[in-house]
Length: 305
Image (cartoon, rainbow, N blue to C red; front, top):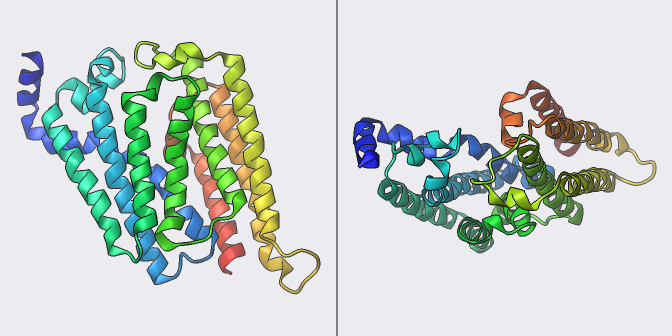
């Protein structure tokens, strides 16, 4: 009865509650789709830009759909959480029926949009993998130690790969290494922060399976591989030896600097217990925003100019 009364009381605000449950803040993650075509120097091509934009919107729709399904699945646990209890579904502002219906519509939109690009098969496979892995995570492996880290990290990886799949851009080995371990770095950092801040084991039971020492070791390993992988990509992308156009790739080499500082800043934030929501660093933290801008400028200078 309580849920019904709450839903009726908030009925006029259903569109707002639905939009909130779609977690638009999380769409920031989908900008990873731009990385591959931007690094390849093809983002200025009209066809590539259009196909990248379609992939971005498709991923926004599909990721919002799985967030809705996740909140439906976790609504009882969320009601016991000091912060998550205010989510639209847990608080009763959005009914489970409306959430599931909206999720199905968003899934349909996400899988129909790629049909507007040429040869959408690879992108559709990436989107399908994202949905399958995420649903398996939500309903099964969320509390399976270590495996759940890989499942969450795969979401970042598939976003980055979707940009290449949409425009059929060859992806370098080092790009895959950096994206894979960068994703794992963020996920492990989030778990480490949750553990340090005394995360609620009732709402994330897997936290009881981790120790500080283990997570810190994995976190350091991932940070090392990300920095090394990016350095190898940046210098491999540059011409070897002396040549007339060597200065043109100097900005690409210099882009290592903001990447290293960004990794160090993430490590410092996690150490301070502030890494529970990595996307918030990009949205709210001025230092990270400046590092991203510097990195983007250097890549534009090195790849396009």
